[in-house]
Structures are given as structure tokens and as C-alpha cells.
Length: 302
Image 1 (spheres, rainbow, N blue to C red):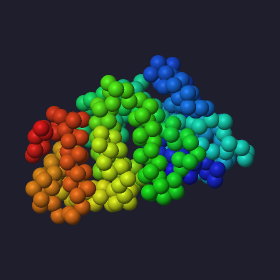
Image 2: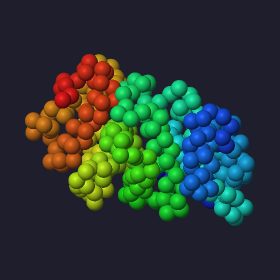
Image 3: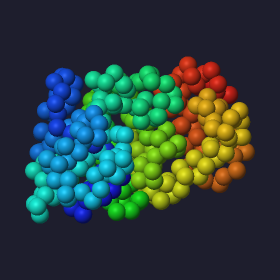
Image 4: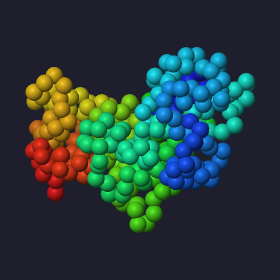
């Protein structure tokens, strides 16, 4: 995901602020990133900290509306590149909101899933490794070719960044487990709330499939499948909700009911991707939040 910060500044889908904490986790990641070039990792706590860093790096005079810029920042890590006085800034800067760092005690996947499945998830790897994966994702966005200007180009950039981060962090021992964690994360976010450029769940799954099937699947069709799946999930959840806004439990129930319809051949869709999404989505929730899922799911995981 990209957005314009100023005439000469571009923000990708994830973040920055000069490192002021001494915690080993954040500090070690900041050091690791130097192997990829001149990259700074910044953790910022609030508006004042972010804008102070932007003033130092770019000059607030080069930003059209600093307050609007801060208000529109993603809650996840993001990358800032740009120019100051006509010259490129010295480094690529990855910003991270303080409340999603390991030092905060919060799990980044749980936070970015909006807490719908609880604050503590069940990982096949760990909360720390999945955090690292999202930071390494941003490293790929430091390359100047990684700023798309429309959904399909940005979708390719996001998928490429996901795979870059996976390749950097996967080992023979953790490869399969890390793949399941990150595919589950992308399936959930793609289906429930991500913007179109981040609807990469199926592409990521297929790219990491041992058989390598469907690696060149049509990105526009994948986006359409996630958009349509989100719509039917919303309709189903609202239909069974006791209040105007469905709860997370009602959302899970809606997903499991739709999965059953898909497997029974009664889902009103001719797109096989939608059935695949519903199965992967239901399975991902069951892995990340097994007790919550089991308490309401109409189908028990294998």
C-alpha cells in the first residue's frame, strides 16, 4: 500500500521513528536491517514523536498537512522515503508504532487482526518471529521499484515483500510453520478488512505451496474474490447478529456456516476462489484462536 505524504514523500503500507529504546529485541532487529543497506528503524509513541522525526528528516514545511498525515498513518509498520531540499533523504526509514512492538507486551498479529480473536494467539512459530517477518517485509519496500500506483501493481509489490521477508527468515526447521502463520495472517486480513493491494492471501499460499501451483494466478481476480467473500461474510454475520454490529463470535460462526455451504456446494458463487478462501479462513482462525473457534464453530477442525 502506498500513499503520498508530500510532493516528494512516499509512504508504503508500514512505519518509523528514531530508535530511542534499548530493548534487545528492537535493537537487534535495527542492527540486522543494516545488512540490507542504509535503513533506520524508528519506534514512535505518539503524534509529537512522529512529527518531530519527520521535521528532522524532511522538514514539516515539505509536508502538506502534518496533522492529517499523522491521522492517516497505518497501525502497522510502514516505510517512508522522500526528498529534502531536492535531495534524497539519507536512509530508508521504517517506522513502527510503539504499541505493536514486542516491548509493549502486545502481539503484532493480534493487534493487526483488531483483537477480534483475542490478545494472545496460538502460533506455529512465535509472536516474535511473526513481528520480525512484518519488519523484514518493509525492508523490501525500501527499494525504489516498490511503490505501485494502482491496486494490481501494489498487490504485486506486497506479495513480493511478503516472500522476500519469508525467504530471509525461513530455515529448514521453521519453514513450514512460518508459512502457515503468515498465510493464515494474510488470509484473515485479506478476507476481513485489508485494502485491495493487501489482498494477497491466496497468492501467498500458492507461492509457498510445495507444488508451486497457481503462482501466476490473476491478481485482479484474486482481489475480486476477496471483495466478494468479504461481502457475503458481512451479510451472513449481520443475519445472525443479535445487535447491529456482529461480535467476533458471530463473525466466526458466520464464516464456519459459509464454509459448510461451500463444501456442500450450496454457496451462491461460481468462483472456486471464494470456497478456497472460506476454508483457509476458517482453518486459520481455528489455528490462531482454537478455544474461541471451538466455542462457536459449527464445524470442528480436523
